[in-house]
Image (tube, rainbow, N blue to C red; front, side):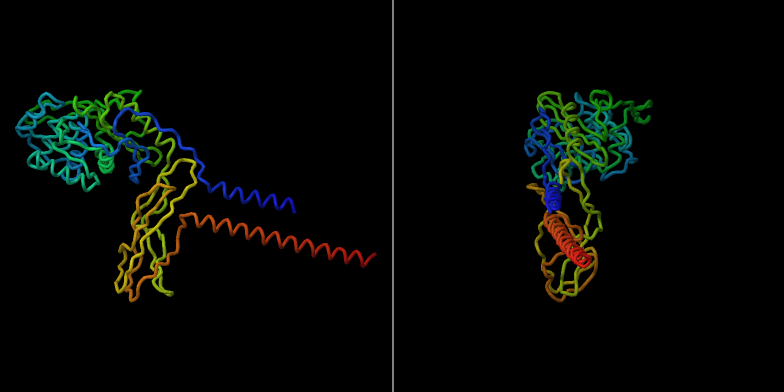
Length: 422
């Protein structure tokens, strides 16, 4: 009896311990910049931040928006003619010595923009896509708002200082999150050397090398590096934005308004902190059944994940997301395959996660209001574990009672046999 009780107690303790979040979070590194964000690129979750919404002049990290718009709106082999403004605007600043009337491709301009931070390349691309720099700035701001950058304001495509030209560490990370989806950015950013081919103004072409120290100095190396952009002016101070991937997880480091050039070491420390202490956990794949939405006793609408869904948690944690939702009344409405039915708002402990949209897997015409009865396809909250524990306890109790009854029956049978042959 004591042995069975001991086993039962041990099992109950083990079940509870395995489902308690007991991971002690690692201490994040100390960084010198005023605005800092460490973001998971897949989910958009902020792993670490410091003044992430404070707006500062971003200097040449501005150019990641210029690069994004160029990759979204223009083909790489398109030939562009340099106007009279880009060489003048870029004079005395970082440039690749473009001259008026020079003809080169969008790809050539992107290499000059990324490898050597050419302000003349930025201005040329702006005129190519927006006709004027001011029109292109409007395009930049429109795209920024689409990405969720609500208090960002761009005035030019290069990041040359302007009191009204500002963004935040969080917003730079959001722009880099979108830019990192384009493989051309990684290809160019990780190139050590490039030569703009001979053209009508430069018979020998433009040779250039990558000045990013992540690639040129071993002590600044970042495993899994996929691209970055530096920024500095005397008024804007130092800024830096970088992306790296390891073991299927992609992180973004965004740093703005640094008074000293510590951004390379700060970036290394933040990436190591993120990759060493946090993991990306897949929860649903696009098309996975998540819930059954009950319409009547005879009809349930299966709901599927509209997209792949993952979440970030500390390594060693056993926490799983819990969800809430707002019921939707589909009275007298037809449902088509792929229609959005509702969204689940996930939380992980006290942290809100990105919502997951759920779509209908079937088509159906509804003649009565939908009931708000849901059945999990993949349980993802604490109720599942409570139910599991209760089932285990009930099973053990039943087995224990059966063993006790069987033992008593055996002792009676043996006693009767003893009395018979006595």
